[in-house]
Amino acid sequence: MKNKGPGGAVSNVIWRAMEKVGAQGVSFLVSVVLARLLDPSAYGSIALITVFISVLQVFVDGGFGTALIQKKNADNIDFSTVFYFNLALCLTLYAGVFLLAPWIATSFGDPTLAPVIRVQSLLIVIASLKNVQSAYVARNMMFRRFFFATLAGTVAAAVLGVSMALAGYGVWALVAQSLLNNAVDTIVLWWTVKWRPQRVFSLKRLKELFRFGWKMFASNLLDVAYANIRQLIVGLRFSTTDLAFYNKGESLTKLVITDAVSSVEDVAFPMTARLQEDHAALRAMTSRVLKIATFVCCPVLLGIAATADHLVDVVYTSKWAGAVPYLVIFCFSGLFYPLHVLSLNVIKSIGRSDIILKLEIVKKVLEILFILVAMQMDPLALAASALIFTLVTLPMDVIPNSRLIGYSFGQCLKDVAPNFLIAGVMAAAVYGLGRFGSGLWMLLLQVTVGVAIFVVLARLFQRESFDYLLGILKRKHKGE
Image 1 (cartoon, rainbow, N blue to C red):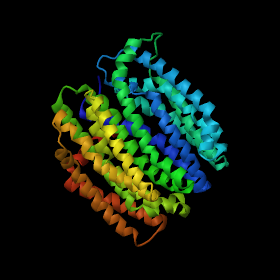
Image 2 (cartoon, rainbow, N blue to C red):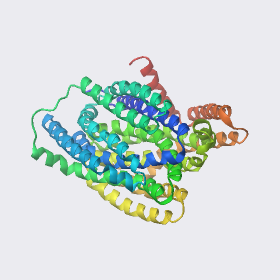
Image 3 (cartoon, rainbow, N blue to C red):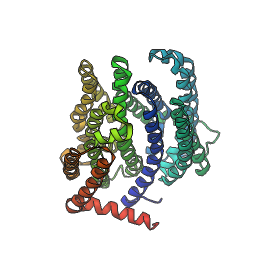
Image 4 (cartoon, rainbow, N blue to C red):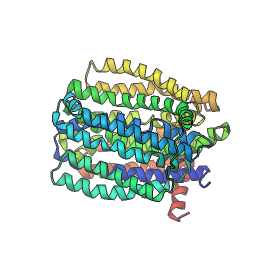
């Protein structure tokens, strides 16, 4: 099997990141056009649909994709069984959404959203056709296939989405872009990946996978539901304009942190699953991947926070200025996301989905208390509660690794502290510079100065990560 070592892992991360950034880049471009054409209140209404679809997307996998990757001896019977089960489940879910769309739209305060909900929910059906193929690619470490599969969909969706937005189709531009991107992506993946489902279904195999998968499904459902509950509260309790600002601040952060860290996690999980019995190797790989993830994410997130006011004004125009404080809060919250995700990845890799489920239950009970207090104040307090919750629960996710593989909370902090400090110094300088002007030229100057400061500091104080990534990029440039 190729790409088993750390170098191969980073290589796969690069391919996965390129694929995700390409897809999200299209969504970002279309969202910028829509944000300039639509009022924040209209944009907030669509955010409510996004919350609803995000929860339903958890059912597409049901934890079985993760179970297929984690199972040591998974064969074509396992993959075929999961494929047919997911397809039947997703068709049933879509039928329910289609029938309930008018009621859902009315609950959101806008009955005209019913057709949008019905069309956008087709993503569930498309994803059911792609899920097992994706698990097969991940298990066999063929992440380059994701990049080429996404490329065709990205290009087609870019043309369609932006053209429809400029032609005045508004919300439907984003809907069409998303559907076409996922449809073409799925078709190309089926064409390039040779796996096909057999005419076989094993209830016994499904039950075996379910013993691991249901815990992952439950924890994922809790995670996604609670990740979106704040937006739902903002939209229903306050106003769609408040929700638009909240959503824009959070989505800009997710565009960076979710793509980067999920790319790392997508590759790290099948790699660490192979090392589940070699705790020393698993500990070393986790440390290395965490250093690399924070080395990349910290300067980007703190850089965005330092330039937030100019960034929002230049990209979205001044009517979106209300999104700036949310963007800053979510950037700081996102700093700790790699620690949460990669720590849970270790627990998942060694098959302890029971620990993950218990952690999620405890954390969500705690989070609901934060939400109940914050919702009595204002939307900004709800955003701040997410940051406080992230800090409070960080030890809960990291500490179990000390017992499982000998990777302590103190060692974890020691591994990432230099990246936080270097990025913090860079961000402080960039923020100070921004007080002397505004507009596009000041934003470009801040970015240029920020990159220069970080490169210098990284070469002086974090040479290991800097040289490691530089070496990987040089080998990629040479085609190795």
